[in-house]
Image 1 (spheres, rainbow, N blue to C red):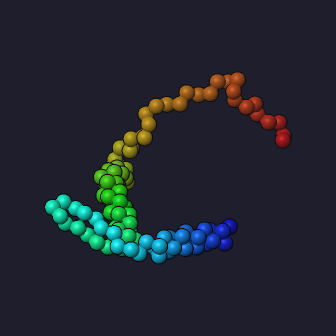
Image 2: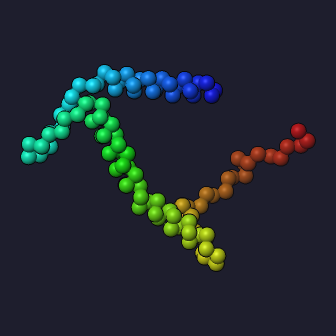
Image 3: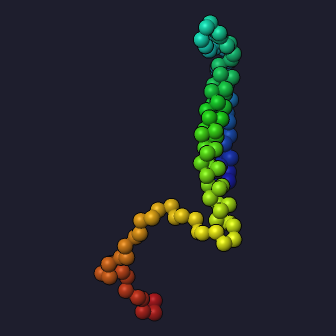
Length: 105
């Protein structure tokens, strides 16, 4: 299994490496007011990926802070228990759906 994982990683690496080698020509990003950024295509794709990752992390920060605050409150002695994720209760299973006890199996 470990060999399979490393083979998959090598396949992904060489695929991305070939992509980078095939996209070395210059590309231009045209902004407003005539501003233009020229760079190899692979750098533009890398920059777009990095900006997307950064945006995702920044978008998750408020949620992380909220969960951290709830965890701190739950860790304090004498604090009320943290609220459950769902307030809905699961009804008990009907008696006919329950399994009978096994006899010495």
